[in-house]
Amino acid sequence: MTAQLLDGVALGQKLRAGFKLKAEELAAQGVRPGLAVILVGEDAASQVYVRNKVNACAQAGIHSEKYTYAPDVAPQVVFDKIAELNADPKIHGILVQLPLPGHFDADAVLEAIAPAKDVDGFRAENVGALMQGQPCFIPCTPYGAMKFFEEAGISLKGKEAVVVGRSNIVGKPMAMLLMHAGATVTVCHSQTRDLKAHCLRADILVAAIGKAKMITGDMIKPGAVVIDVGINRIQEGPDAGKLCGDVDFESAREVASFITPVPGGVGPMTITMLLANTLESAERAASA
Image (cartoon, rainbow, N blue to C red; front, side):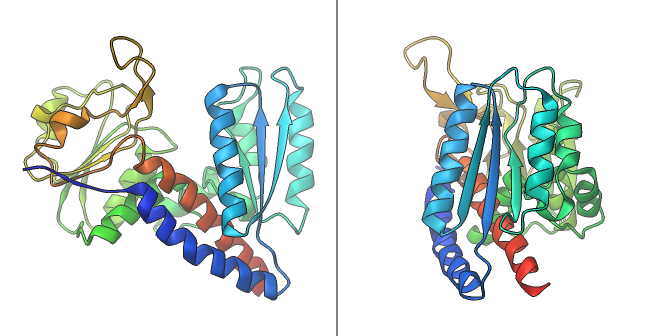
């Protein structure tokens, strides 16, 4: 068996074509969707992510504004900018690129964003709504993963799902979405005993642990669907410098039925669903 690829680039392009039409419809109603992105510091990966998000906005007909600050900026400067953007009717979504420098309270920064503009879905209020099955905004990476299942016609009802990783950004909301879709969910983490045994039960396996190639083919149930959320850079050997996921792709693809590649899988879908959430916020503003 060789797994079918779940292509995030292709699916993202398909969805974004519809986004551009929606953005044009909203603009005709006098509401041009707008996203503000705040970047603090000089983290190279964060700079790439922000650039990709700004470019994606332009391609989808979404207005974007980028605010860049030095690593040592006073937190109050960022809080003041968020307050200004909260009150700006031209902005429908606000994103603060993580991670933030150590002198920031990241939770406080995220909580400063107005709930109606929290297009990352990270505020406690939006997290609680997701848990109740009534999300205002679905966190973008898990949202993108769910779109893969939808596109491939993969039913989640009654399936055994295992999520490896319990972060607030991916692991926990991913587990909630799978549960709401009818799957029986196990969440594994650094203290889980016999991780392999759990993984081998999974019809749906989501790897979001942040360790390069941690999930190998012998840990995957034959025919399982594998979603690889990890983005790691190989440190040594002939492939040093290349990106890889949390799953050992070459061994996993020989066992799984479907698998996301890295790069080109979940990453593009994360940005796509950020655009979707921004458009949804603009639609709410248009109908208010």
